[in-house]
Length: 295
Image (cartoon, rainbow, N blue to C red):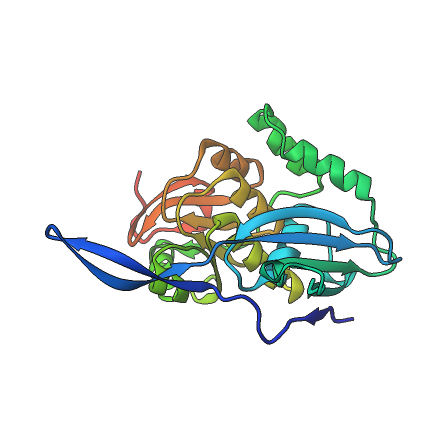
C-alpha cells in the first residue's frame, strides 16, 4: 500500500535574499546576494493507536524534500525498516503554532502493527548522542542494529567513471549554483549517470534526503549504485550509506579515520579527494577497474 504524503503546495523556500557590501580593490559596493536557508526541522513519530507522539530529533536543515529527510533519517537510524510502516507524512500546521514554525515540524504516522516503543527510542538516542564512546563501539553499534556488510556482488566500475562523478554532481547542484553554500549527495548508477541529487546545509541531511527518496520509492537496498558527497566522508555518512546498502561512496575531500574503518568493516569501497581523474582509494579497491593497473 502506498504511503500517503500530504505535501502542501507552499512550503518554506530554500533560498533567501540579503543586501551585502561587496569589497573589491579597497572599495565597497552594495549588491543583493542569495543565501541558503537554514531552519530547524523537528521530526515527530506518532503511534498507530493515536497515543502520545515522540519527538525523535531536531536537525538544522535547508527546507525542501523534508518528507524524504524525515523518512531517510528514521530509516538510517534503524527506527523504520520498510515504507509500508508509514501511514502518512505531513507537516504540523496547527493554528496554535507560531507562524515561524509552520512547515518546520514533520509528523510521521505509523501503520497499525508497526513496532513502537517510545521509551526505547529515547534510550537509543540518548546513547547514540552521548560522548565518550570509542570508534570500535560505534561500529559495533551499527552491527547490533542489524546493518549487514554490503553484498560483494559483481559491481565493478571503471576508474574513469569515478573520475566523472564530481562533474556530474556539480552540474546537478541547482541550489549550490545560486548560493555557493550547500552540501550535496548524489546517487549514480554503475555507468556514472546521475539518478538523484539532494542538497542541504548539513551533509548528513543531504544523505538522509537521498536515502529517504530511495526508501519511499521502494528502491532499497542500493546494491548496484554509487553515492558521491561534497566535502568530506564522515562516520555518519558511511553509516547511512551502509544502511542503504550502497557499495561505493566517493567524497570530494578526505575521509575520516573512522569512515575508513566503517568502509572496511562493512565491505564498502571508499574514495576520497575525487576531483576528476585523480582520486585516492581508502578501502575496497577491488570494485574499481583500471585500464593500466599499477603496482
